[in-house]
Length: 323
Image 1: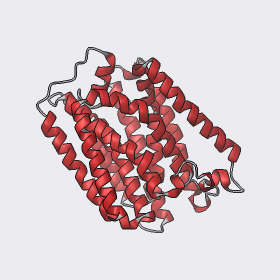
Image 2 (image 1 turned 60 degrees about the vertical axis):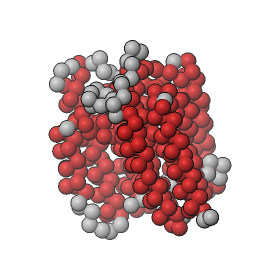
Image 3 (image 1 turned 90 degrees about the vertical axis):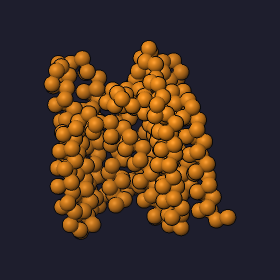
Image 4 (image 1 turned 135 degrees about the vertical axis):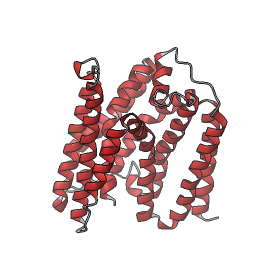
């Protein structure tokens, strides 16, 4: 059997097992998957991006400057707002305008990156401007659904990265990968059929309430929160699976121990000491995350998802750069 055929069998088998287990124990799997894989997958994402960050930016100087500046400013603003939720900014209608303002800044930044990428490729990417305005209008028209959409769309970004990477390094796998992608809705529909009439998750504890709320129980009160949590955990599990296993499988530069593939470390003009220090901070943060989950899972989970906005934002420049 070809390697592409094995990929289909392995992927579909893992999805089937994951859907069955998550459908039976959505709340428990939500806790376990985040505990085990949240920190590791962030470290693997950083490793992947580091291998793609050139030492000399050249014509991409403006692009990377806007990208890094946007990630830093948007992350800092988000964290400031998140940890000041008792502030006057969040009273009454102010809360909606604060959220919409941040969302608009994020959309404008992503649209600007698209426009700059088009200039680099010497093509007419002016469509990025009306696209940005359309998305911003949607965010303002249905802000509560916009925020929830980001929760469910973010796991799909990893699949997009994998698709772009397969096109570059394993084009013979592309058709098989598209078959795998087509199977994901099948398993989601199976989950929805099984859990549609299910009861809601008991919310007597802050942790259970936060898990259900994160999955959209307050936005979609008529839908079983078990179904919502199971859907989110299933997509997040694929997200973790892609970053931790599949991307290193199709791209040798993403294999953790191949340090010679990292320009900032191996290149003569690199910054090896700073890069190693950053890597060590990442490793210690991952270990601290495990300890935090073990000591106070609920608080650590809230803190993790607040800071996770940084890695979500960091994905966009690299994804757009691959277009």
